[in-house]
Image (cartoon, one colour):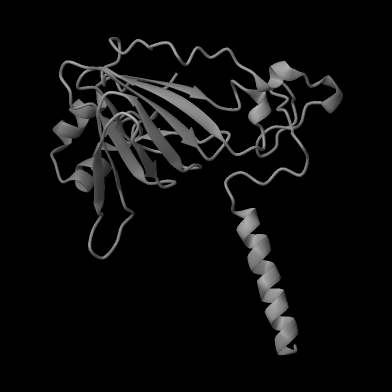
Length: 228
């Protein structure tokens, strides 16, 4: 194979591969409103008939200006997510958002979004935020920042991150934009200690270097989902 032909073939494969592994593929038309009730299963949702699409497919009276209840949450936060399941017009557009309310000393506990990068904007209050890198020869590095009203922070896709309201007398509110129509969330403690069926306590005791009785106690707790 001639060098020039080989180079073109490698370049083409690299381009195709980069598109294939993207979280949300680029749209090939103006819009593809999700047909939530279609029996056809695809990666995402099939398109609603364009002739049946109307403005309501791109609209939701979400009341995101209204405070959410954080008192019932064990972690002191309430996440209101607007993704493709609530707003079908988001299908194939690669974006969603969430309002996050934090009680005094409340937190959005360590979690990841397997399919999205997140950019967080503080609307009210103060937040201590951070993320941890993936495994390296030098361990996992923690990046943290204290954010005030109007500040912005980015959490890279797939990395464990958190937000905490350090004020004991004031709530906080933030808006997060995410680079997927369906970013997903894995809350670390819930996934590790609250999975169904549970992970073997032999496995977790070895992993965390603690006694099995400690693992059994953790698995017996009620692991709450603060996402609505």
